[in-house]
Image (tube, rainbow, N blue to C red; front, side, top):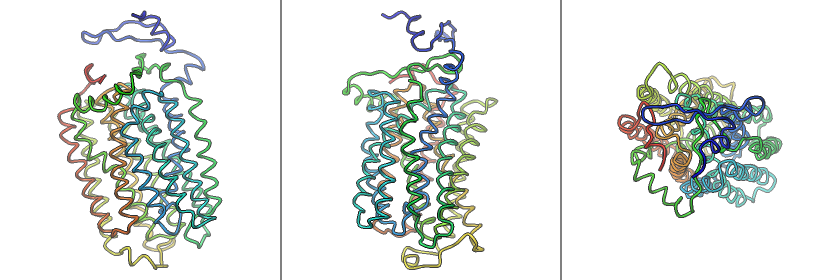
Length: 470
């Protein structure tokens, strides 16, 4: 058996002391000082994680939020998104295993590779309009890469903070990540302000491509999780590296030992489903390219405020018990689902896919109806960020163990992608806008309703020892 003092020094770079919590001894490590202490601080590491996603998924979001990937014809982008989420769904189910075996940082780097490939495909199709097969194929490759990136991201983001900081850290990550969408949308708006083509220019795609390539190198600046110590001196629970067979069985063990996670599955399924209607069937369908760019800008800007609000102001409110915060988060998100969808319904019933097919009279930023429509995009941005932050926070409330959190995140991304793959394919084959909208509303409401019993019965004021491992 290894010496606990030696092991503590390997992990935390300091000398351990013993503190007792109930009947359990908790090892407290001295955090490193100086430059090493700064770079290995959990807040800095979560911020770097946010910038990786700023460069890669952030640019992807900026492009997707324009509707049709910035193109005039949405079919290729919708089918590419369907392929993306289909491969994401498959590999997302096993990506927790991949992350545990390769390590979170290596998995994160591999995951960034699909984003420049995907964005380059839209540049190619701008030059060669018949190259739509390349767009779809790059979407499928991106699904594999995104599964790895988001699983590594989720396990790191939820494992580094203490229990009292999880909402704050999720909010910090979500704010930086969504700055990618904000910056990308601002670039698209400036590049295409005078455009009459209703599609983005080559310069926009090139700018996005350069940023996504930069994202590949950022994980090199991150500290290995094995060397991380939380702000309270406790070590980050190290990821185990058992056999592939054992890791595969962990997926099923997680379901058997913590079956409450099943009640979050409808919430997971709906968590990317609503993007199709928001981006393609609303923003992409009825607005000019510069209005689409401005809508996209305010949407991702609102996400920053929404994530910080619910993460820091609600879910990390120290004066309230954790169970109280869990209920308060639900009470905020559930009504918001109905506010934005009732509002959207009154717009959706005024147009159809057929009526917009040959309509050259798109809503522009100078039209009198534009302010009300852009406010809806702002509220959708609030809803999305609060939904995703709350989902991650609930998973973080179930465990602090990186291996278990990686499996939970794999479930999350798998089911999220199953829903997205189906609805993007429905959009690609031309299902009526109203059908997609009603299914989006119903699934969002159902996701919150199914989550409520899990919040009531499973969320505790503190994470117990038996919740820490598979």
